[in-house]
Image 1 (tube, rainbow, N blue to C red):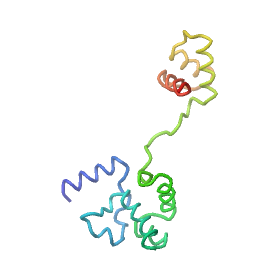
Image 2: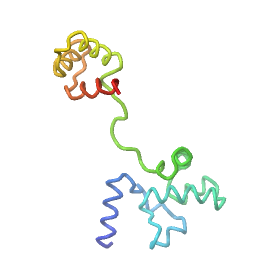
Image 3: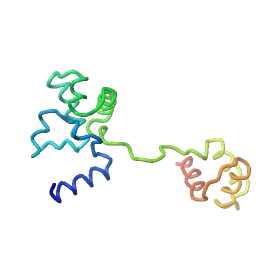
Image 4: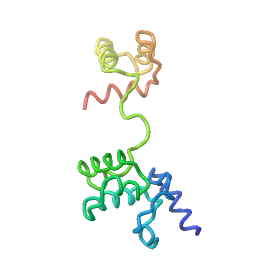
Length: 150
C-alpha cells in the first residue's frame, strides 16, 4: 500500500468515512480501484443507493454487495432523500443536546440572575449543584443562558 493510500485511509478514519468492512464490498464497480474505493463509506453508500434506483438491484442484493445491511440501506435512503449527498456523511460525534441543564434548570437560573444581576456564572453553577444536584462548569451555564436570548 502506498503512502497516498495510507494518507487517504487516515483522512477517511478521521472524518468517520472509513468503511468498517471494506473487504465485504463485492460489487464489481469497486474492482476499478482507479476511481472507486471500497474503503470510502460515503462512496459505497452512494453506489449502494444508485445500484437500486438506477440499475434495479434489490435492496438486499445491493446492501450485501456493498458490505452493509438492509437497515443501513434504508437509513442511507432516508438521509439521501432528506439532505442529498451531504446526508450520507456521518453525524458529528458527541452529544446533540444539553444533558445536564434542563429547560427547568435554565429557567430557574435565568430567574435568579434577573432577580440578582450581581450573580456571576460561577454563582449560578453552584446554585445548580446545590438546588438540582447538577455539576456544571460556569461556561456551560453561560452558554445555556445565551441560547435562550437568541
